[in-house]
Image 1 (tube, one colour):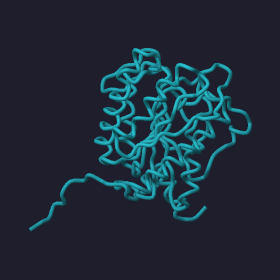
Image 2 (cartoon, one colour; image 1 turned 30 degrees about the vertical axis):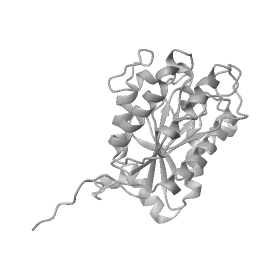
Image 3 (cartoon, rainbow, N blue to C red; image 1 turned 90 degrees about the vertical axis):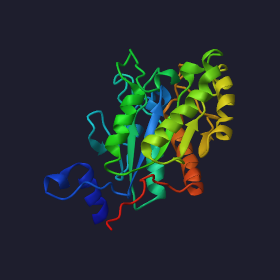
Image 4 (tube, rainbow, N blue to C red; image 1 turned 90 degrees about the horizontal axis):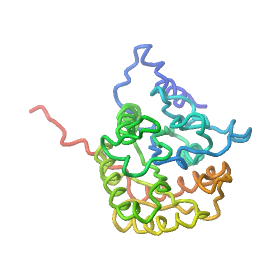
Length: 273
């Protein structure tokens, strides 16, 4: 690992601050991604030996205590006894490998079992006793002090796949994306949305709706769940499928970033006359 990478890692772990080095400005070489949605983003795949050791020296995550740590499965902590392998870590590894001079930071924000109705300001999930949207915004705010938010991954919809809930789904997702972009300060912040598993018939209705999202919202990509398998419950991706899904998310993110470079809304600069 190079000297520059070591210094950045020390900054992330707070060591340089203790030594009196300035840490006020976010580092543009730290690329941060927000992981949002419900259980298939949080991950429910079994953590076998293969996945227990999976990681990358330049992929880190913001843990439940708001500390930057080396990224390892499980990335999420929404339901500690259930959290397992999801797409986040393989996504981060792919993004790090594609840009050798960067650190990739992951912000786990997914909450299992939540419908899109919970992903609004003040929305409360009584099962996990969390506020999914508000908590995500707090974590984004914290992360912005360290690096640059480069994109959002969204995988959710199992809780909204019935005919009644799906009616307003696209409108709700559109509003959510716009709120996040305002918070981040990038009107073209790339958002990659994953299809639901193709192994359950009632998920296909929502997948058809998701296919229309890029027509309504700019700089959004939909990634396919074709050939991905469940872990036996017909709901959650198994570990190999979740890991493969992360790679597909990375391909979608890279495509969007090439088309829309980061735009920062910092406002007009002040000049002393």
